[in-house]
Length: 346
Image (cartoon, rainbow, N blue to C red; front, side, top):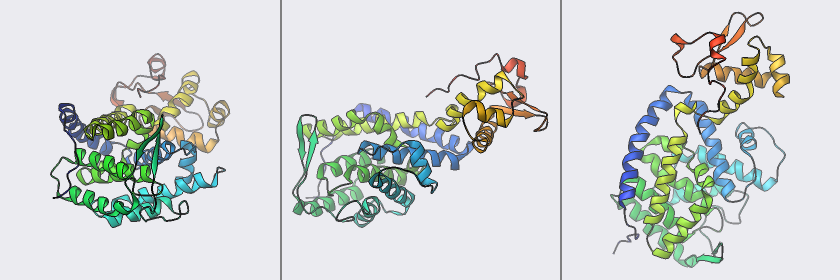
């Protein structure tokens, strides 16, 4: 008989599926209205940093961004290699067929290149997964892994379960089998997003891994409790909540990214204090280079938060009221009394 993973679909899951579907339609519009290239770049950084941090990688978002941009950083060689590998894997993610075992092996080869003895191959030995109180799970014997993965991929191809359900079930079953000597968490999370991208391509640009990082203890508990109950419905509910939270954090209302948040906190107070402040003065006050200040001012202009009035040499900056359209924005004296300097909602 064909393999059927054990899981129950709860009323909570049904409600979350409906909410996520509606939220993704709204998110699509927001992506179209925003600087989607920049947003996707930032989300890719969050995705990679989040997924690797779950496994113990200590590189910061700034360091991961630098590596994505092809810059050199000073950091442990192994951790730099992990990031470089993940960049390659996520860049090629959409070229992988989520229903082909061979493509999963190819993704693992990219993700673990130079880090393991057998990249792109299932493990040859046994593996135990450590938990809070010792061993939490003993994975199936290595000689069973190819057959179990064949069964799992066959189920993935044949099931008529909703993509949000089957991606979560696959993720759980994959971690239960633990088919590789290393990289199981990274590949499981990557493949979860790849399956969802078949339903809606925006999922490949959502930093779900970053939200898992923020709820890392609950992530492991959901995996353990699903194993104990022989029911991945527990993990399904958890992942649907994580996906919904990720979508909510990517609202255009929040000016789409933390970089602009940082810009607001750094630069807007200086401009409010002195609308005619120069690039040089801003650089000195914020401790940033003039190139960085120029880029960040451009971000604020694009986000509609500031407007340049007059020439570069003799003009001044006007801080705009975020709650009004540009056609009805106030002058600088009024804007200084508004809440334009407060942090965006997270």
